[in-house]
Amino acid sequence: MAEAQTVAFHTLGCKLNYSETSSISRLLENEGFQKKDFDDQADVYVINTCSVTENADKECRQLVRRIQRKAPESVIVITGCYAQLKPAEIAGIPGVDLVLGAGEKFNIAHHLKQFVKGDSAKICSCDIEDVIEFNPTFSVNDRTRAFLKVQDGCDYNCSFCTIPIARGKSRSDSIGNVVRNVKHLAAGGVKEIVLTGVNLGDFKNESENFFQLVQALDQLKEIPRYRISSIEPNLLTNEIIELVANSDVFMPHFHIPLQSGSNRILGLMRRRYKRELYADRIKLIKTLMPHCAIGADVIVGFPGETDEDFKETFDFLHALDISYLHVFTYSERDHTKALEIKPMVPVHVRHERNKALRNLSFMKMQYFTQLHAGQLRKVLFEGHARNNMMEGYTDNYIRITTPFKQDLVNEIIDWKI
Ligand code: SF4
Image (cartoon, rainbow, N blue to C red; front, side, top):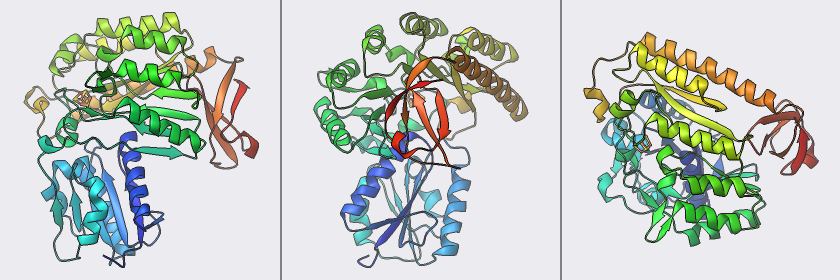
């Protein structure tokens, strides 16, 4: 592999995957590789896959075909959740050279050095139980916003989810190391850090927990803005909410997965809370921070979800003082307990429910934005321009679009909405 000089990446899935791709890229650049765009010719292509993405298999195959058409001599590496879950299936895709499981993705340089292109794909993977190491990663958007991974894996066993078997047990960085990474990002000009993890609220290390992490970062003056990416309602404690409410640097914005507004379905999903706890969290947040943005994840069409269950979810969300929804249509995943739950919801009903909740989300987002019209809020503008326009977010996550002006880039500006 000595002649392999250029590498291109494609990422599927969540912010965590983007942050990992970014770190893998820096790792290879430090080893002498030159980074290319995915559409360019490269010697090595890395696809970082996701197990949650519907049709991960199809998407992967399409990408591999695309690469083969433009660069038939290149080395194609597949890593990420899907590579951990179905290595043999991926290795069977014509054109794939190397499959790296969860424990091997950060050893990519070593594997590439040893690799000799042959007829069949090489699988480098281990049992997910053996993946216990934590690799801190981050990605930076336009030198403005960074997604910093502080936790990985999950010890929960939600019945629809493959993440615990794709990413392994819950493990976290140390607060000291997170602080070092934050200072490094701040020195590079980053103004906002989004703390990310698979089950972020489960951040823990011997005597350290998530609240202590948030407390430590709240003291750091180098970064003007932090966001907590997504946190399970049962792990979002009163003390975290109160700290954010009194903080100058933690933004008034939470993303709290709900998944269903029916306690019966929450039970089948093996979630660790009931809807009453969720409603209490929202009530406290809104009492302390009436301007706070709150997003929720919801799954529609989970097995056994009747019209009444869905109506309960819809009505619950309708009445809840939240700002937007991320709606997911349930789809069957191998190795999950949900496969045993009957009856299945017909696919067209799943799509109807998805549409109903997406409409509700649109209305909630509009209402939330209108509520703040005319207010002065702080906006951090990002660097890239599309059609001569630029974007930024208020502290409470309202997206602002304005004609591009270089002197606004990476600045926090008081902006009338
Ligand atoms: S909390 Fe549940 S849904 Fe989230 S990663 Fe863990 S098992 Fe999956």
